[in-house]
Length: 100
Length: 100
Image 1 (cartoon, rainbow over the protein chains, first blue to last red):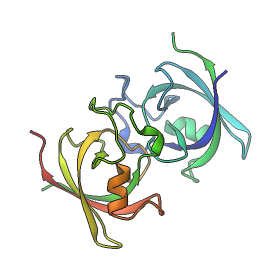
Image 2 (image 1 turned 90 degrees about the horizontal axis):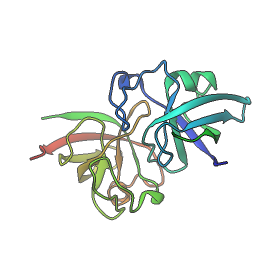
Image 3 (image 1 turned 90 degrees about the vertical axis):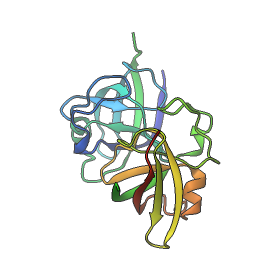
């Protein structure tokens, strides 16, 4: 299965209601993420190794661009793995279901 | 004229050759940028107030998502205003020509 390690950040609140690259609307309370290469609809488990918390998200958007960053999480997903205060944090990804 | 202050970062090298949201291909040596709302083709002057250097870029892509970040610059543009080592740096933007 596809796995990847790198840094995660999360969407600023101002993205609420904006269109994502997949055509859906970003909502902070949904469990979604932006990834640069995985097909839209892919389900991914994101784990924070600092506290061993994990969350399942669906890839709905493209990004991030910055070096070392592999995923941008929705606000709710970021809260579930407790990276809100850090802003950027190391994570590991694992694909749990491919897009249909 | 539209002006904005916030933080800039720049594209990781792995984006070389990848399609942007506008349909063009990202090349590190071109003076381009990702911005979340300005129309593709808009020309923007980006200034680093720490050293007063500035660079003119064309908006070709969407992003970034993280709080406080307003623009992601191509590698060449980032080098021109000397933010490569910092990774993320404060900048000011000014639109100098609207998209045609």
